[in-house]
Length: 363
Ligand SMILES: Cc1cc2nc3c(=O)[nH]c(=O)nc-3n(C[C@H](O)[C@H](O)[C@H](O)COP(=O)(O)OP(=O)(O)OC[C@H]3O[C@@H](n4cnc5c(N)ncnc54)[C@H](O)[C@@H]3O)c2cc1C
Image (tube, rainbow, N blue to C red; front, side, top):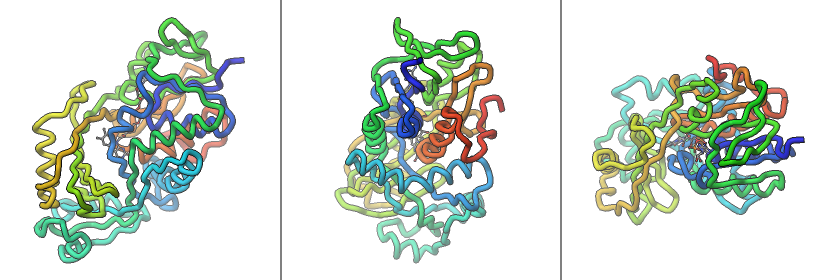
């Protein structure tokens, strides 16, 4: 008998959500993180959850997103009931600008069975009076939601601990995976070997470091994203405002988070004058009253980028008992529930809710 049914390496939103679903079904889970759980990309992200409709989604990524977004309201409620922690999930709606210049933003939503409304400049002004008059028409996505990442990961950690089937080791870097006779036996932590029936690698941008000694090269790379947090002292707008790959997210306390960049600079989490300057300029261009807001904080996180933009979900070929869930790039929060459902099913040998073939490692 192994002391743990499953060992999860990495306590970001992917590792924590999967651990929670496993432990809720009675599996004994040990989760190890090289730092404190939920303090990397999953802490740094903006928490935007775009809507998706399970009855319409066709592409594998859309289906995975739909499986997640359909379950966010229920999981958020469940986490609050179990832990008393409100993850801040709210359907605040989104406004996407720049649609007259590019066909893409609108096309992106068509066929997904998601409500979208085209708004004139007048509609925008009526809906959000603090938005600059000259930003043009917009696409309204009323079901777009957000959550507060730090609250969500804190709630997940507390929920895992509440199951009674979950053990946590923080500040312990897993140095390697322990395999014998083409089977994973556990993990190495310092001089110790911790045994488990199965191992899930959910180590975000660091995943390749653990897999390379096994000859597995997924090419997951860190992609830095910077964020600026402003406090205007009052609620200036209620929708998430999107312009290309950048956005303004209004928190319920009036603070505004502006993100983000996409930078290939290795494992460097510094913020830079140029990037923050660009984010602030976008903020003031869309909402001129932000010019007087206090700049409270800046930070950066390392997204786990995959070569084709899809996450890797599933078993490592040739190594029984070893699975990966990583490479969610800009969508790890929004895909976390679907990912955790699929990985829980794989690890417990259950019938899959949806095919995961598109996400297999050898694709
Ligand atoms: C600025 C920014 C904005 C974003 N906005 C959004 C958004 O609006 N919506 C959305 O859905 N997504 C967003 N994302 C992306 C999302 O945050 C990520 O896709 C997601 O957090 C990835 O989760 P993860 O659990 O795979 O990785 P992480 O959260 O990075 O967790 C990996 C964990 O593994 C641990 N680890 C690594 N190696 C080891 C080891 N050897 N031993 C033990 N532990 C190890 C790390 O310490 C870490 O805690 C954003 C990301 C950034 C940076």
